[in-house]
Image (cartoon, rainbow, N blue to C red):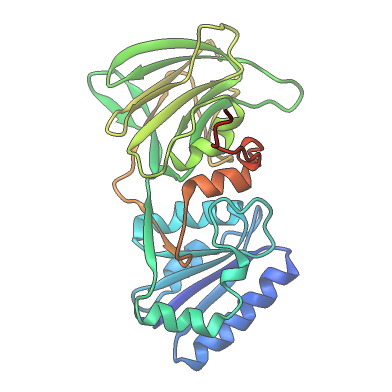
Length: 306
C-alpha cells in the first residue's frame, strides 16, 4: 500500500483520540504523506470536505474512535473504495475496531502497511432509496442512503411514542404486515447490534444475507427472517397520517417518509474494506469477549469416570 494521501478521523470531543490523531499525522507527514484530519461525531461530519479536498487517490482512512465513528466512516467511504483502519481509541464496545494494544507502535504500523503485511476484510453494505408512484413504474424521490449495520423504518415524535403499521414485500411479494415499533433490515455486521437487541439472528459476517427483524411487534407470530443478499426489501408505511415515519441509517436520521412513498432496501454494490492487523482474528472470540457470553468461561473435563 502506498501512503501518499491519508484521511485521519478522530472521535469528536475525545482528547485521547485527538492526541493520537495528531501524533499519527506528524509521523505520516515526515514520510511525505499528505494528511487530511478532522473530528467525527454527531455534529461533525468531515468526510464531504475530505473527499472534496483530496488532490489524488486517498490510500487509507485511519479512524480513531468507537463503533459509531467507524459506522460514519463506512457510510461515506465504502462507495469510494477507500480502505479503513479502525482503532478503538476513546470508544466503548469496539466491535468493529482493531484493539488499541495492536496500534501503539505506530511507526511499525506504517511499515506494515507499506510492505502489505496486513489483511483486508470486506463487509457487506446496504443501500436504501425512497420511491413513489405506481409499482409498475416507480419514481425515485430521494438520494441513495448507505449503512454498514442496519436500515430502520421507525416512527419518531416529540411528545409521544407512536407505533407503526408496516407492510413488507420481498422481491415484489408481500411477506407480512407488522404493527409495532418499527422494522430493521440488517447486514451480517449489523446483526450483533440493534438487531440482536430486538431478538434477531446473529449472522457471521462472511455470509451474504439480509436479516429483517420486527421491533417489539404486537403479534407474537411476527418473527425475524433471513433472506438472500440479492433480495430487494420494500417497506410500505400504512396509516401514518401525522407524518411520523422515518428512515434511519445506522441509528442516524436519513429522511422522512411521506404518504404514498415506500422504501426499497438492497445490497449495495460496494463493500466496506477494513484493514485487519491482528494475526489471529476470530469472529467467535469477538462474540465471546464483546457480548460477554458466560458459558464459554466454564470449563469441563472430557474425562469419563468409571
